[in-house]
Amino acid sequence: MQPFLNTLNDNEAVFLGLQTLYRAKGGQTNGAFALAEHPLMPPGFETPLHVHNKEDESFYIISGQVAFFVDGAWLLAGKGDFVFGPRKVIHGFRVVGDTPAHMLIFCTPSGFEDFMLELSQPAGTPPGPPDMGRLMTAAAKFSIDILGPLPAHPDTLLP
Image (cartoon, rainbow, N blue to C red; front, side, top):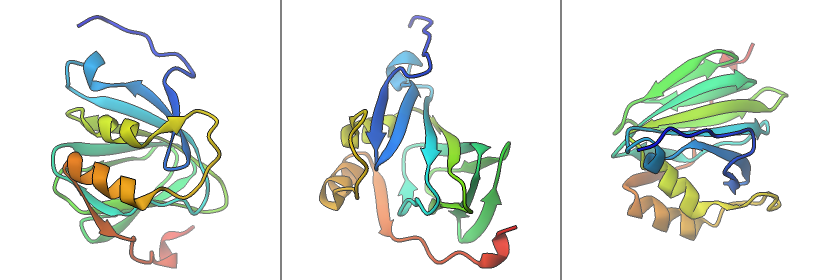
């Protein structure tokens, strides 16, 4: 294991139509963790409802607002907020409001980044809907259960 430096645009790709920067991968952290950055998530972007069976997933909001559905409840997170999603807990998120969100995703142990990398496309690939067949196949391979769309979030969460 060697120290490493990741600079502004190192390891850039497109995952689920989003610019994604892979800040740390399991091979660089001895499997301890992985860190990815989504610098520009447009309003309305959302993940499916899903469960990670092998890793915990944490989120740090740099800017914008993101509504998280975690274990049956909606949480609204904004600039400077941190959300923890333990493994085996149903969750997903949606970018809300009128401005894009900027977010870090931290997974412990590493492994989720391999799922992301398998579905990633080269930087500069035009955004488009994900290939759901490929998504479901990769999810099964990496012990992620895709459960369907997020439920409607309550408007009372919005400021």
